[in-house]
Image (cartoon, rainbow, N blue to C red; front, side, top):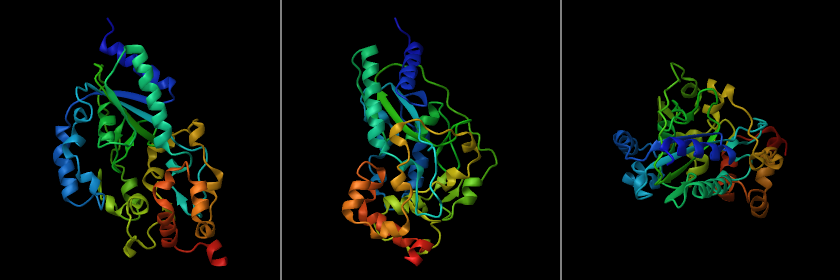
Length: 314
């Protein structure tokens, strides 16, 4: 009879064949150690206006409420480090949005992986998650040995960096768990020092309401004037805390065709954005994560940035 350790090895091989960079496994349980920290974070107002983070509190802590009878959490990393980066003089877009919307790309791969698991092990009860449910994905990835949560609140992997999408399979298969990762940030505070809006209020404590990614994507209201001249030309998301992280010197470009940079998107000037029609926006960003902000949201973001030279001349 196949052992949990042998099953884990097979799943990691299947994950590699599906294109995932790394795979780790944790035992499904309630994250009791995260309860007080999550409660304090929410009560401190650090979630900004993301009211959905206040919902499903217990479910967020226990994946067995998402998949009754779950025994294992399979955590996966997928590299999205691009082959080229945008000119910082242009309205900037977070690197994860350079190509096709990762939600759709990874969900296809995850469903294929789950089917491969069932082909190998028989009928399973489980669900795949790609930023699609109240699950504490970074905490689970750390427990599964894939990396540690850095001072910026993102997952870091020794020798590989942080340019990774996270995804999970929660299932009722008995597997051999991996040992949790250890922290390797040391005394470095590069991410804290570089944040222009002081969103990282302490190591591993993010005031999301001050984060540029929140302001340009999650916030549906007007961006507060207090953030004027602090956006450093970011129009969708922000990569500053990752760009300055020493561990990302070990990152390597991804090979996934769907995540290759769309040149038409990377080269948009401020004047191009301000002249854009809704129809052009829908056509250009139909397969992009940028559509989440919407046409009005992106124009709001562009107008909030100081005029660039091309706009002044225009």
